[in-house]
Each structure stands twice: as structure tokens, then as C-alpha cells.
Amino acid sequence: MEDTTPRRRLHCRLAALTLEHNARVADGQIPGPPLSQRVIADRTGLSLGAVNRLAQGQPVRIASETVERICDLLGCDVGDLLVLREVEQNSDA
Image (cartoon, rainbow, N blue to C red; front, side):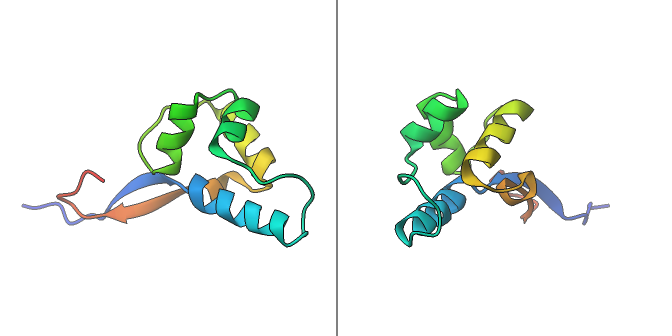
């Protein structure tokens, strides 16, 4: 019997939230310079490679304290950054 339960995977919305943050900076809604992956890495303690993988939605092990620092930096909640998405049963993405 085939399992028909939808499979879900954790997805990081770092790229989308960074774009939203930078748009708010450009519009003058929040102060400061735009955020690059390098700035995010420097301010969170993650390697640039890990930030890049998170931004691309690839799996990365990340400490809860680092998630908190990313959320503080972007002005978002954990649920904005990390979401569960349904994936096809035969997909590993």
C-alpha cells in the first residue's frame, strides 16, 4: 500500500526576506545599508558558503541562536524565515 501522506520539507526564505529588507531600505522605510550575503555571514557567524546555500534553499545545519540572529537582522520571525513546504513524493528537493 502506497503512503499518500503529503511529504513536507523545511524551506529557508532567506533570499526573499533579504530582497524585501533591501527594498524597504531603498524606499527609506528602514535605516541602514542594504544587506548582502557577506554582511549576513559577518553578522551571524555563518560562513559565506552556508549563507549562499540557505539563500538557494539547500539544506544547511544551523544553530537556533544563528536563526535568531538572522531574524533580528532581517526584522522577521522564525516562521517568516523557515517554512514547511509540500514536495512531490518522488522529489528530494
